[in-house]
Image (cartoon, rainbow, N blue to C red; front, side, top):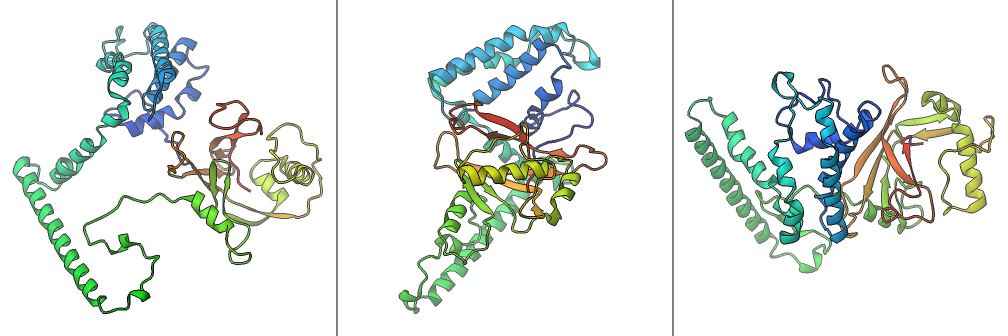
Length: 373
């Protein structure tokens, strides 16, 4: 499933934990710890996670800084519960009864640092850490594990020579192709051609982000009949949704889908949806969950449906609406062995027309499982 990692051996024995691994743990550590540990421990873990999220904000104001300080203070107020329960352990599974951790001491100066120097995201060490991989670790793997320094330097020297050769031949090919086009009529040139396609070899761009907002906008302005319907890319408020052109399951009856995905109220839910669409119009915000008005034998205007088990979701940046964030994939899988209840990604859906995410927070929203029909 997208976005979730299974730690088969647990997380207590992890070594050299990267930030990516920490994010995997943070995705569900609170959920799996609920009712399994004392409230004080759960509060301390949650406040520590909240603190880590807040200090990564790309923009901060006085209210955000106060929230950061209050979160850190609440963590310190509850951290002793972890030692009292004996869950802070070191080598030999021995209990550690102190908090002599340099990073915890460093947290005390973060608020002051933000006041003096701005957000801490600008001091990220990702670039230098990545350089250590490309300039040291990768060349070392190509060595014979003896006399690392001269072999690493020789590897970097040869790599640089190859890069310069590719750049030189790329520039030469570019000049020759440009010379052949000098006699061509300028009016024959396509104004829509992107100059980036003519970049010489060795000059590369980062992987582009597919903008489903723009794709949806272009599709909606196409002439009727020029694109297949229904559209697979569409925008709802601040969220863009994209489905594959071909569904995962073609032409399955409603009752078969209800049995396959363990959704006994699928037929009543579809009937209620169609009734609300006919009554209130397309812009109506539908209620998710609750009692169904239609019965289990409700008559539908169709008998078969198509099902997508994967959907791409894209949002704009919270602090700059012009920045489009990378799309994320949401999956749903029907019940099967050993997952007797199925496996579904969870999302937060806005159900109140009077609320607007994210300014309204979690008011007017509901957590649901993804199941695309």
